[in-house]
Amino acid sequence: MNRVDFLYLSQEDIIKAGGLDFNIFIDTLEKILGTHAKGDFVQPLKPYLKRKEQTHVADRIIAMPSYVGGDFDISGIKWISSASQNPVKYNLPRASGVIILNDSEKGIPVAVMDATLINLMRTAAVSGVATKYLARENSRKIGIIGAGIIGKMQVKAVHNVIPEINEIKVYDLNKERAIHWSNTLEKEIGVKIIIAKSAQDALQNADIIITSTTAEEGYIEGDWIKKGSLFLNVSLNDPKFDVILKADKIIVDDWEQCNRKDKVLNKMYKQKLISEQDIHAELGEIVLKQKTGRISEDEIIFFNPMGMSVEDIGSAYTIYKRAKDLGIGTTLSLWEKPIGV
Ligand SMILES: NC(=O)c1ccc[n+]([C@@H]2O[C@H](COP(=O)([O-])OP(=O)(O)OC[C@H]3O[C@@H](n4cnc5c(N)ncnc54)[C@H](O)[C@@H]3O)[C@@H](O)[C@H]2O)c1
Image (cartoon, rainbow, N blue to C red; front, side, top):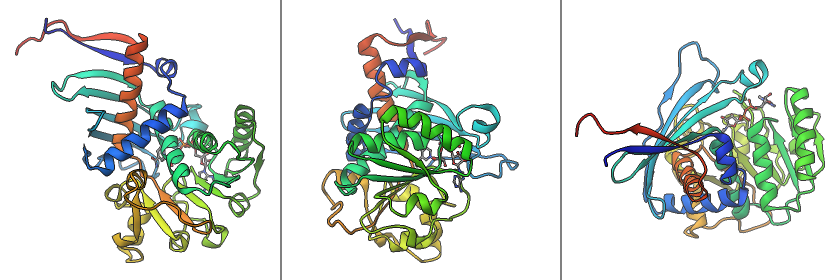
C-alpha cells in the first residue's frame, strides 16, 4: 500500500521517448522560459563542487535543483559533472550526470534518469528558441568555435529553426576533432561545413555565431562581428569585452545566474563596464512578448545563456511523461514498505 517505485530511464530509454527530437525540446523550452518569466519557479543558486587541484574552469560537479510551476508542477535536481579531459583522454563526453524528479506534493522521487542527453538537448533548444526570436530570418551562415557535442547539438537546433542555413564554418584548436565533427555533422544535416583557418575566419561573415568551447580566456574581438548577427554565447569565456560592448542588445536566460563569479557579464559588471540596466531582457520575457526581440536587420544581439535548472527539470518531466505513456523504462523500488512513518 505504501510501496514507492520510481522510473529509471537510461539514455537509450530517453531517446526512445523522444530525447533527440528538437521539436519536442524547443516547444518545451518555450513553455519553461515563459514559466520562468512569470516567476512561477524556485531555483536556488547552484553550488559548484570543485577540488583545489581542479584548476580548469570546466572541471567540477554542479548541483542544480529547482521547482517548475505552471503546467509542469514538478521538482527535481540535476547532478552534472564536467571533466575537460574526458573527450581526448578517455573518449568520454565532457559532461555526465543524473536527474532526479520529485513529486511536488509528496516529495517522493518519481524518476531517476540520465542527465547527459537532457543537458545537451535543453541547451541546444534554448539556442533554438533564441534563434526563433532573435536571429534575422534571412540568416544563412553559422560560424562556430568548439567542435564538441554541445556545438554539434547547437548547430542542429539552429538548423531546425532555420532549415535554409547553407554554410557552417567551424574552428577548433584540435583540428582532428574539427574534421571528425564536420564529417559526421555534414552527413546528418546535409549542409556544407568548412573548417576555418582561425577563429576570426570562422566568425567574420557569420549571421549566427556560436561559442561552445572550454576556453578560459577571451579571444574573440568586437570587429570580427558583423551587423545583424546573433551571438549565442553558450560557453563561458570566449568573447572579449568589446564584443559585448558592441552589441545593441544583451539578452540573458537569467540575470542572477549570469551575474555570478567568473562569468563574463559579471566580470564586466564588477568593472562597471555594464550595469543591470544594460541587460535588455531575459529570454522568457521575449517569448511572452513582455519585451521586444529583434527590431531591425542591423542589430547585433548578444545572447548569454548560463543554463538553468528549470530547463533541465521541465524537459526531463516532459520526457518522463512520454516514457510513462509509451511504457518505456525500468520500474525500480525505493522500498516495499517504509521502515517507519
Ligand atoms: N550555457 C549552457 O547552458 C551550457 C550547457 C552545457 C554546456 N555548456 C558549455 O559548452 C561548452 C562545450 O561543451 P562540450 O561538452 O561540447 O565540450 P567538449 O570538451 O566536448 O568540446 C569543447 C571543444 O572546444 C575546443 N576548444 C577549447 N578551447 C578552444 C579555443 N580557445 N578555441 C577553439 N576551440 C577550443 C576543444 O578543443 C573541444 O574540441 C563547455 O564550456 C560547457 O560548459 C554550456
